[in-house]
Length: 253
Image (tube, rainbow, N blue to C red; front, side, top):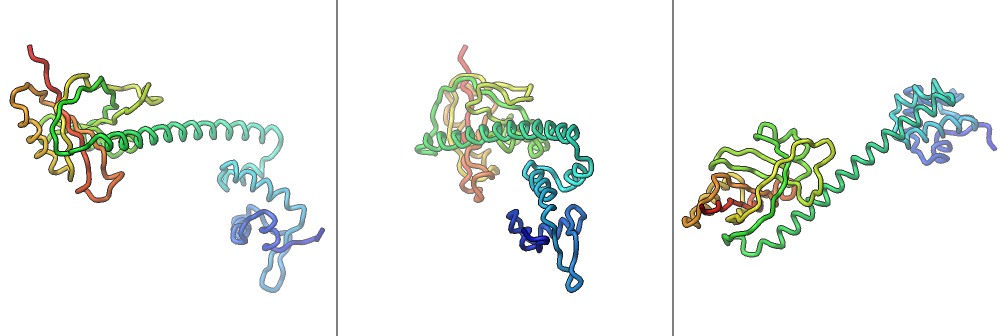
């Protein structure tokens, strides 16, 4: 066993790069026991492996360098166990959040793939019977981009006429609302006059007019419900956006 080790030897022992040890030295977290006069070469004693191992351990647990420095200064059994319990709780919370996000991503993948497989002749207008469907209300466009649901769930645009609209996040395949989500609304079951719009959202009103004009023999809801299938999160070219447009056919008295 050697008395002293260079930066390269110590970093290789822990699978770190030399720049990491140099940075730890610069911030005072882990410093060599001696420095060479010529060129300032760093030398570490073997018993410093225990401190570096502790730092490496805490980095693997996700602690910041500042937290590690505080911990190293206060380390004793009770303090360490309390910190480990807190870290375990935080990691479990992060793990549960990641699992929830992964489940949402899988449902969005399923929604896009299943919907694309059903498009067929995208220009055709048809009547489809839907069950009751659930969504998280978001509101107007001014609220859309800072609402987390917008980024994970398929987006629904509710048009009250050809210009005014509000948004929701479609709970596709959800058996229960997301954790912490108190407000969930429903789209009523029934027959819907449907077609697909392909292209930019700016041209959606033209497709809505075409859809509504196709069946003058039935009474239609004033609300047009548009499900975004291919959107800006999936496709860079807005000419390839695909929207499923639906208008409920109202029951005749």
